[in-house]
Amino acid sequence: MTPDRPSLLTRLRNAYDILAREVAKFGTIGALAFVVDAAIYNLLAFGLPGGEQGVLHAHPLTAKVIATAVATVFSWLGNRLWTFRHRRSQAVAHEFALFVVFNVLGLAIALACLAFSRYVLGLDSQLADNVSGNGVGLVLGTLFRFWAYRSFVFRGELEAEELEVTDRAVGEGDAGPAAPQGVSASGR
Image 1 (cartoon, one colour):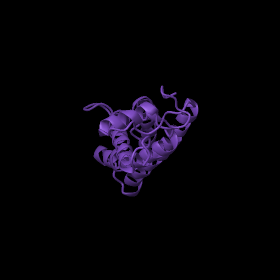
Image 2: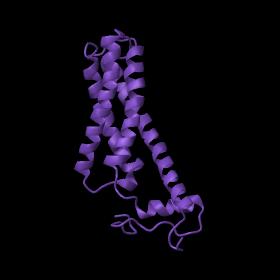
Image 3: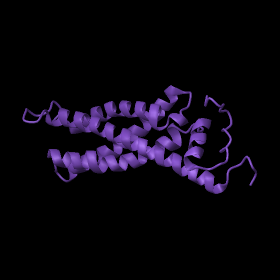
Image 4: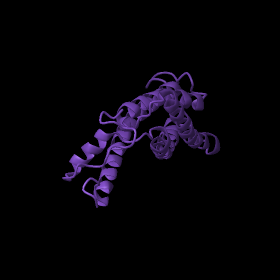
């Protein structure tokens, strides 16, 4: 081991620490996006509590697409500006396009669960819709989206400051890994 290169154990701890923080932040943004998605879906499909049915009660898949579209924009902003800010690329339009593509695939998973519940099993209650679309579909779609965001959307090099902060958090005495190629001390 050279003096300026951290040990394998230190690099593994750093990678784990970064992953753990990303998962926690992704979960927070995801929980908030879930609230946005579920609230809009239930409002469109079932209306206000004690009121008449929602304007899209007869079209639950359309209601789910609209709700998910709004939640997607919220989620992209939260993940770009907070969760994966240390992995952002400069091509914002390209990043957003990839984000939308992977959200459409995640939405397809939720729609498949909702459609199966509604049209195959014949379950059309508010509880059944929420369990299938906002429960099972959400969990499966979320696992897929985290992997896709981390692998394809926010895949930029880790910024030097992020790696240095991780080193200090781990408590190691070495200076930490060198900045990735193309990243200056300011991270740009």
